[in-house]
Length: 68
Image (cartoon, rainbow, N blue to C red; front, side, top):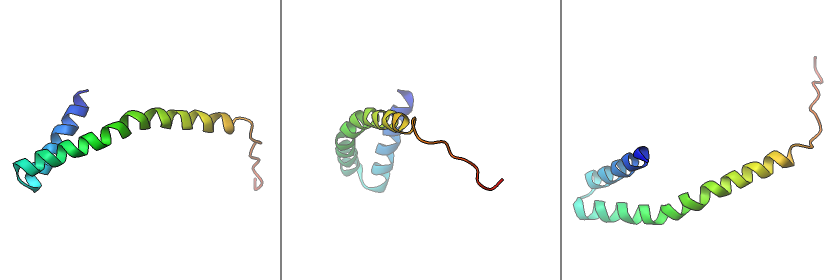
């Protein structure tokens, strides 16, 4: 949690430094609001895709070394 809070604080700091205070805070809050659902739903979907690839490749034929 501390790393996430530090990343959000760094994001706000960079936006305020590049623009001014109202635009930096507004842009940061908009960016966090837009990307929060992607972070919430993206990680479980990534895990499901990883498990699918693991089980899909489980019955694959072995790779033989041709040039020994």
